[in-house]
Length: 345
Image (cartoon, rainbow, N blue to C red; front, side, top):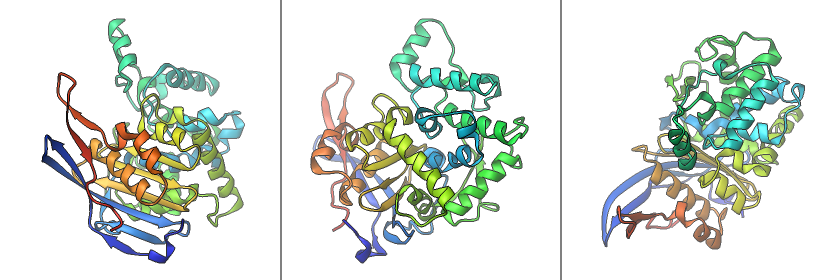
């Protein structure tokens, strides 16, 4: 279904309500931009054209362009699992970390070359196993270790010195800024920037720019043959191997599995989500104003449903993400988290 005829419609920010009993305890406000395959704004929720935010991990599929266009993907004979992991915020489960370690060995590098640092796996079972065994987390457990391994692979192919690849002026970071400028149509050379959780620079972008960048994952976007092939590889990799984008119980992985190749979704820290609705020819980006992750998942689910990416049945199947329950410490349901009003009234 196309929404081109409603181009430019503006709506209030999305509201996510958190109830306890029959009383609304908290309300989160979410801004969002939705664009078509030409990058034209279809709908905005809040000031999506002007508000700027750090996209964090929500644009990893754009950053993965460097892995292919550097020639590294083919030179090192990588496959869909590697490319999906390059786009991931993975849970740190064994299949994720084993693939990172194997990949590093393939390119003649090690965990010591990763600047992302260690943290305990997002997967609780894996984290408990480490603690039970008296082991500390390693850089391979970092949710961004796939992206960083992809960076190292690109630099290997380009014969760049990987030392200090997290520095603003390193050739890798200049390369990434160039790619993001080409895709988002936003010059980031003088944009506000900071250091992401994984150690590399992150740049303030508009939600409109983020959504425009993600539209290149759509199959019918007018782009050069080389870049079209790049995004075909990325699109097919994450859809064929959604587990490697997140892992067990991850909303992005679960949604891509349930919708069987109809949409792509990626989360970012501080309440950011971005993705594409492949059949509808739309892409979007959203940001929770207070950065709350619980509201981001619910807002993303409501947005996908409103633009006919998710059917009502699929929305209910994914209710642990799209309409999660509020539970007390005894495990009793005492409230819910949901969007109370239709987004396209």
